[in-house]
Image (cartoon, rainbow, N blue to C red; front, side):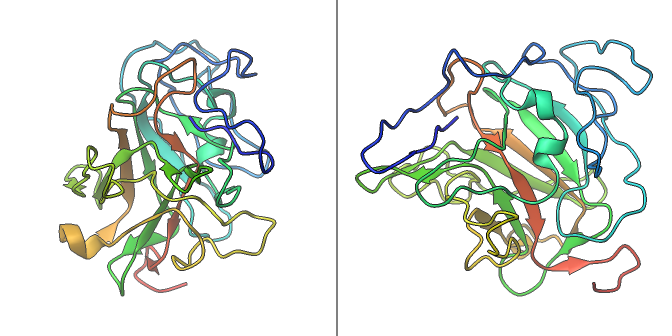
Length: 262
């Protein structure tokens, strides 16, 4: 996980610190009924709806009814996930931390409003009120917390991206996870995030939002309801904030469940 550049000339710290204030469940544990974004905030990440303890180490269908709320372009619920080694950061705010709008911190700072997947970790999210559809150019944006280091390089931690319309048949975007010099083409987690709820930068405009754009035409899919992100296993893994750090997803070209447009 990246740490922010707090001011010009300030110490730039990469990876996790032992003082991270995240009392998280053990890496590898899964949440039954991770739930949906709600105005009241994220659900308890350590129990089922009934309050029972969750068995660790299994991939789980973690979905729940999104309920009635205004249509927006962001992911609505987590349907499955698996945390890898060195995960933990953000689990105390899960699933809400990865639902809703991105909370970018700009070109030179990595946001802390993220969930670390850990080595080889994965997460599957669903859009329930506005689906991504193939349209002109970028159809979907994935927001991580990459940032530009002093000297010009981008500090990136990558994930591969897969999409599905039915949750059963998946289409994988090619991710060149070893091509650092080329900027890891096709991978998520390579561009800083500029959009945040309080800064007026559109989270659905690829020209200004930041993050990484994906065109469904590249994998031959007309519509995507589900997005799966998988840490490439080639990132930094230390403490409890290792690997790809998910902030949010955003639909650029969207369609309502009834086939209409918003």
